[in-house]
Image (cartoon, rainbow, N blue to C red):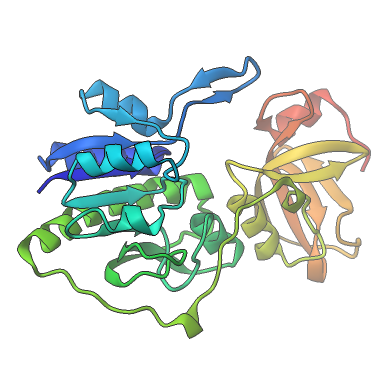
Length: 305
């Protein structure tokens, strides 16, 4: 079976590596064009491109599939199957029609829940107890295609998006291999999604960052966990702006209003939230500074309680 692979970030790299090391014949890898990153704005390749080049796989980086030349180039590769994982581009119908066995996608949610660009983040932001990876056929509608298989996993109460994504990448890689084998053997399932049960996971943006301390303790924790690694939760503390990377529950109660500082101690900075509960900020980053332990930061930068 001739496979063309399409993906961009690390979760896609993990899946590509799993398919490649399991011996699946991959004739080409498609990934998004290189982009400028960091302060120097140097052009950087995607994680998928980096891995593909390291093992000698041909890499294609078209800006769009609307270009007839790009379409013909892909068609000339004559893929039997296209495997897509977090590619970051919408494939037009004429591309979906190229491979004999269609185009399949590993989507990091339990479809039809959390269709869209940010399923892992929203599984935490929506306070879900479990998530997973769904193998599906791509169709014209966003994440609306028929389901082939699904793998579930519980979400740890303190797990960040970055940590959960790393676990889901491993699950996705194993599921991708099993799905390709099932398609090859003619045993792949095909189950329609129920649109009435669909929920959505839109892209995140920096407007979501500020913490609402009037929320419950767990909701604040989920907010912080869900926004790592980007755009990261923020809070104003004693007139200064901080990125907040970790908050934890305490057993304390307070009569102070949500958002007011309670105590600074060797464990971190305590702050009031809803229902008189007290959270402790464990890790933060001041503007222009580096991420560090909150107690260590305030030891050198006194704060008014």
